[in-house]
Length: 88
Image 1 (cartoon, rainbow, N blue to C red):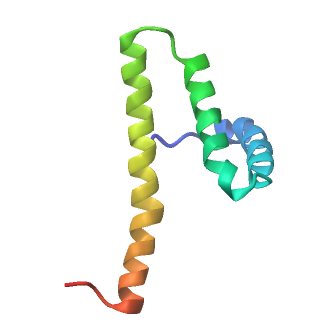
Image 2 (cartoon, rainbow, N blue to C red; image 1 turned 180 degrees about the vertical axis):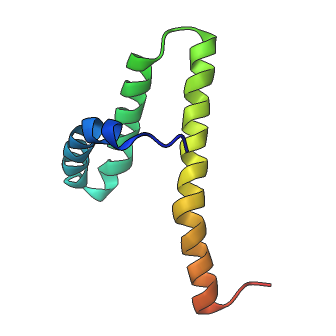
């Protein structure tokens, strides 16, 4: 993940936290669609209409997926292996 400075975080975090507040109020069956909408709208508005930028946007989404897996899902799986034993 391309880590950003504490100063950049201070600028962005109030907006991110407000968005999270709104999204947390979503019914469980609507959260994914709403989150998809938010990401899609940001990508469409921030990247220009050319393949080079589409490719960059896809790369960002791919990196988000990998970072989420590495930091959250993998640690969860490791913890569950310790609790219940490995499958092999």
